[in-house]
Image (cartoon, rainbow, N blue to C red; front, side, top):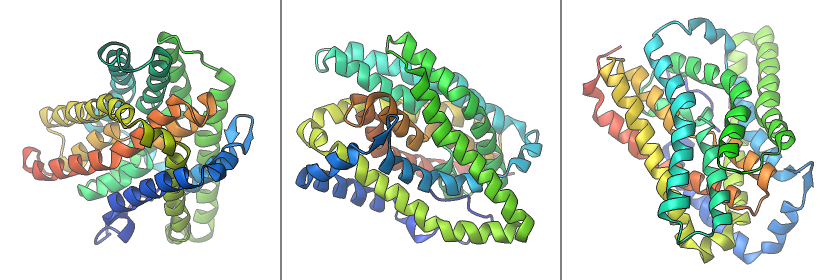
Length: 351
């Protein structure tokens, strides 16, 4: 994923400006290749160690590691500055979003769509949306914040606090919600996934950042992120291709299922945004803090959700499919909310 933009940026790079197009092309390529050469994707799916798919793990690291280098834990000393936006973010991300996503999943997959989805599939889709709901976004938040001219330093504070909380809270929240919905939780695999995709990249990013600071300060960090950014972009697009390649036949054969999974995800995304956005408006939070704090809760750390779904339930599982649908709906939803926020900027006080 892309790194935190600087306040001095004059505009978005080519990738960010055409983000929706690149992702759409990657989705199309994955669907096409998955149906033309399923044997290749089957071979890639078989490359596993301890239930971790190796090609997918490499691509996740290519995305997450550069983002973790951008996390400045010294920014945590500013956690008390402008506390209202941070309070809203934390309440929405950790006390509301995971539980409303689980509730919507139960409502739609087990009640409203009960005649359209077999019970076993419903449980699998429910597990997938729970994983999405418990993983607030990190990397892409910087893009959404930049598109709304958000405060980059404050966005970094919010992301840093979220990352620290995620290390300790993601696995217990997922386990509780999966347990409530009677889905077996393999704790060893869940903890392995959190360690592999959150803790280790965070430690690696911290060590890299510290070494770069000692050698050349912030300019060295900026130069390093510029060098590794192409790998992050490649990781994102290749991951999308791989995900839709693995699920290509299912997606084309069962488009109704994709639409059914998308319904609670769409309701959750727009609902969470407006809860946070109107709370910020009521509390008179400045727009350059209000917009990012609402967008953080709306967007998902889909890399983590997909990786854990694959580790827990398998590449071809309904849980993995549900997280892939999350990727499908996220970009257009987030771009529509960015546009809405920019049109309603006048609702909020200036910083």
